[in-house]
Every structure is written in C-alpha cells, then in structure tokens.
Image: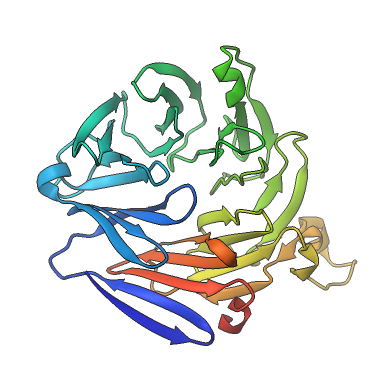
Length: 343
C-alpha cells in the first residue's frame, strides 16, 4: 500500500492508495482515543497509526479470512473481529478476540444471530445484534446480561470511551422510533441493575449515537438530566450521517454525511456556529429550525463519490477524515484552518 502526501488551501491530506489485488474495505473504525484506525477488508485486517500515518499490522486471509467488523481495544494487543465478505473464514454470529502478542485468537463470543457491532472496554465486551445488546465479561467470556432493543439494523450503540469518564454508560436505541436507552454501567459492576433511562431524542429513527468522555450524548442530551443541551443541523435537506465524534475536551463536534461533507460544530463557544436568520412569522420556526445551529465550518471529504467517510478529532484540534471507497484516504486539517477548505 503506497502513501501520497498533498497540500492544499492550508490543509494537509495523506492518501493511502489501495493496490489492485487487495479486496474491498468492509468497515473502518477509530480506536477509543482516535490515534489509530482499523480496516476490516476482504483480504483481512489492517491497523494504522493516524499521525504520522503508517501501517502497524496486517492479518491476511490465510490467518483471519475476510472480515466484516474490526474493533481495537485502545492501543493494546487485543483486537475484536467478526467474519464476513468474499473469503469469510469465521461465522458472522461470532466475535473473535485476537491477541497480537500470542499471534492467535484467545476468546470467542457466540450469538444466536449475526453480529452488527462490537464495542470494548478493558473489562467488558458489548455486542449488538438486530434486537438485543449483549454484555460479556473480559478477560473471560461470561455472559453478564442482555438488553432488548427496537429493530436495530445498523447495530447502533456506544459506551463511555475512557475509564476516567465522569459517567460510565451504555447507550443504544429504544423500543420506539427516535428513542434511546441509557444504562449505568457502574450499577452493573455493583451487581445491581436499574431500568434503563429513556430519552425521546428524535421524532424519526436514530441515525447515529456518540458519547463524549464527560458523559453527555445531531441533538445533544445530558445523560444525567435527560435534557437537550443543543441542537445542531448539517443542512436543510435529508442526508445519512456516517459518523459523529466529540473532541477530547468536548469543545467541538464533527460529523460526516453521504453528501460528501464534513461539518465542524462548536459546543463550548456555540456563538461561533452559524444561525438561520429568518422572519419570526415564517413556518420554519414551527419546524424547529429557529432553535438550531449550523456548522462553523464545512469542507468536502476526500472522495467526491458516495464512499463512506468517518471523522474524528486528534491532538491539538486536528481533524482526521478517512474514507473507505476503492482507496483508503486520510485527511488532516486544523479546526480553524478548516474554514479555508469550505467549498
């Protein structure tokens, strides 16, 4: 895999170009601190360091087969995988944990239906299937509990990303369209279990869920008070959101969509965001547009086609954008330099 460097309009991009013999990319995922990303591919798994961009690991199809899902546990030697793709070697209802020191699979978690998503903490593994979230102990593979969900075809769920987070929670879609459920993971550790908190977040189906490390949940809710903190809008037309991530200090939020754009919102200094200036008499106010805020900066993702793109914040307010089309492409920019990249 060759790497090309380009500079334009004050932004720096780095592009890793796929060799012709490599298979397609099935999934991209950042690790918990956004310092690495994993590629689940038809020709195995590749792990990259983000800055500087370099390949850290490659497990080929002879070892793991083709892979549909890959999740890292921070920067440790443990990697979770789910089989899927043209050269599938392992069942799609099984999560396998690879130990890169022992160079072998060390644990497996078998579910009754195909696995749609996996999240990890240092002591637990969370697995999303179509109508349930399963929680397992780690190390070991004891089944701790399961939570029923509504129809969750996207495998949406998030867990608090860091042990130091103010609140340790698991968040996933509720039974009704637009609702989310919040589970207090500290209570699970103390062997007590309270009913999940339910927030009616949207009128329509949830597209994406993200948590910052301070514990708050494009509408942002406080998981303590269940109140809406801020409402952010990508645009006035319909779009599918591929990714939402908070900066590590929760000052900013970034989001990518199928419109080929990445949007940056200010949370701490929300006056930096754009607002819609319309007459109070207009009906748009009744639709909620009057309370919304628009991105302080918007720029095109690297590919002009319909390739999915994930985005995240790195050190010093850098933005990483990674697309998963025919090539793996990585963009770096600064939050305030991003204004120069508006198209």
